[in-house]
Image 1 (spheres, helix red, strand yellow):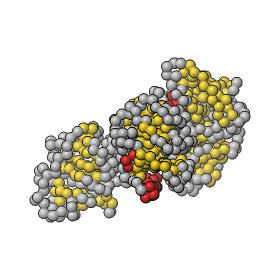
Image 2 (image 1 turned 180 degrees about the vertical axis):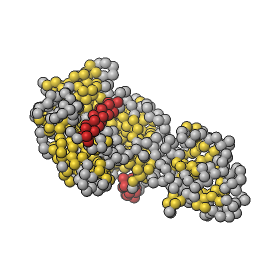
Image 3 (image 1 turned 60 degrees about the vertical axis):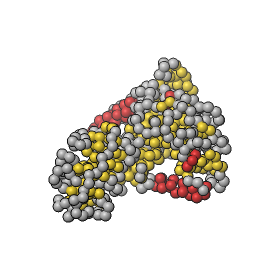
Image 4 (image 1 turned 180 degrees about the horizontal axis):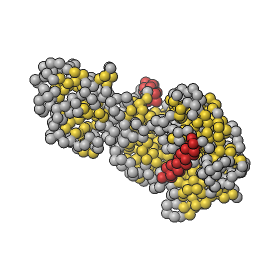
Length: 628
């Protein structure tokens, strides 16, 4: 065995340990939120950016810096590293009558309390050493702003006339040399301007959010910040709202669609429904309610819809008959605007994003009638929740919190309605011999597939992992699961899922990063560490089916001569087949398969689409980053 392969095998063990421990640690408590990314934006400025800031000022003695965000929250710092929320009123800027000229029309002036520079800001930040006779631009380089566009304020430290802080649409920036160099103060400031969740993270799909003034994605494996992207989704929705405003003669503020059904909501609690792709419309007005903030329509039954509204009247409304009638289900929902809403139709659970937090209730969503009491979910930062979204399977719940970004957790309704999913990517895909499955929402003590015992590999109150026996045949798998809830009660759940000879799935972490490593360097691959042209890459997967020689279910694969996958295995990079050099059980682990392939000698640098085809069945696409 070569030294490179020995390193790779050691790294593989570390990856497997990290994967299993990481997946289960999320469920160590019945309900625990985890951040998706951070709350800064990688916008190519002097430092990571944040959200819009309206005002910035120092305390009278210069010991504290205070800011006011665009959402009217006030924060302070004394060490320029940590921020705490506070209260206060920004002071009026000092008069500057002695300054002779201004660097641009409308520029605002700031003077130090002691002799020194004179500063101004408008389209840029300027300094003058001769009372404004001449000005130097200190915030632009080669025609580009270092601090973002839309400068809104500037403050000079009472302690040091060369220390200045600027506020802009991209956050807060500090200079200790009168503007010759700048550092950002945004990385610890909870001012990420998230407004909506556009896509939830999953295998091959990056988290994407709408911001106060654009869109951003959290690329799998990226650690520096969210990446600004063209506002394609936001623009398409804006164009649709404008078109419907013209068609309906009323300002439309929210839209949603499922199949032929289109829902629109507008100012003054106006709701419109079209069952025929917008050819005819059914109007409805909710009395004493505010504007429609968001709409949610289940794909499985578009006659059911939910609306989130501002105002003091109905803030969550529901229709079960395609908009003929809408009923108020606000109940005891905490005061404040409802910003977003989503539901799991199977369990009858409704989640509402409000200015007072994230709340849930349970009801029969298929018919009119009262709903249960709303319960505010704990664990999120104390700030308005701007949106809420479930993943496609309804297993993961995501919340967008103003200032703090995106958070994810196991959907609480899964504790009442557990589901069996693929352990690699949490998708609702068929099982295959040897597949690792996760039972989300309950602790499994024993399991059977027909008359065959299934090993329980790990179990917590929130999630359990089981393995499908090798050698099972047929087109469906009857599961009998014995478990215990958080109260210790023993339950039996009988489930049935489709069965195939192969059902490949690539392991991804909760950000959607594939579990892959460079076989020669023995390091994990992600957006910051790319696979090199000509290198060997190892990927972890499950659901590749039977192996040869046959191997006992529930037993770790041998470290040497691991059993090989029986079905033909193919790998594709940007839809082009690449050479597969190894397809076996992962040495030393249960239910994991190891696929090794050769990266072509010539590649296009950047993210590439990668997937497997095993026995004619394809895995989901994931992003693999390449470099020459």
